[in-house]
Amino acid sequence: MMKMKGKHAWTAKVGEKGQIVIPKEARDIFDIHPGDTLILLGDEDQGIAIMKNEILTTFVDSVLKAQNRTEDPE
Image 1 (tube, rainbow, N blue to C red):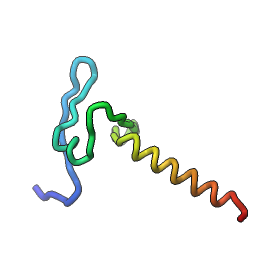
Image 2: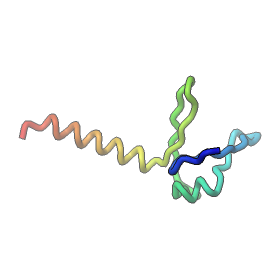
Image 3: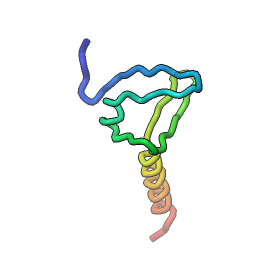
Image 4: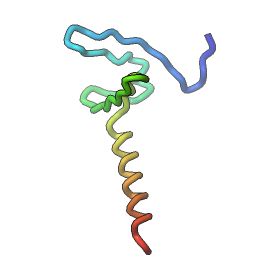
């Protein structure tokens, strides 16, 4: 199996309460700690993506700042 740099795959089982455990290697790579808030994005055709809340917040802030700069006629 060919491994591509920066690309990873893991499996996780869903428990009786619908919970999953994020594998330790994934938590280490993505700096995920107990108490962190994660965002789950879903597409019925393509599946679920999980990201840290801070990443989405930073992205949204950047978009809003860029939008405000284009609206200001300075």
